[in-house]
Image 1 (cartoon, rainbow, N blue to C red):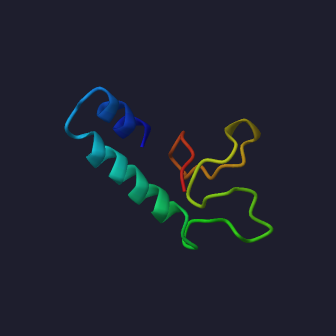
Image 2: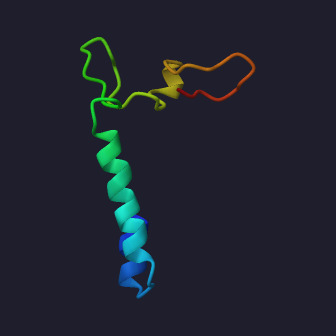
Image 3: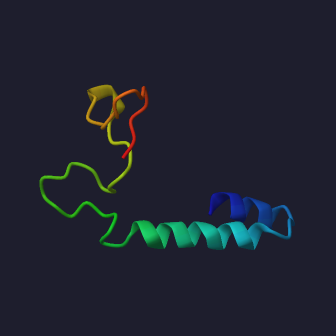
Length: 68
């Protein structure tokens, strides 16, 4: 959404496209499928990185980066 806003302000034609894409992503993340409503869940959004310094994130075997 920020990219779309910046593009629109600079006169680029595709700024609205990027802004609308950001709204679509946001509206998807705010659905029950992604929001962590369980009181035992310590994050806000499922399938995201929570807190790398505390090693709270899931790191699959063979991977150095947390995901899911």
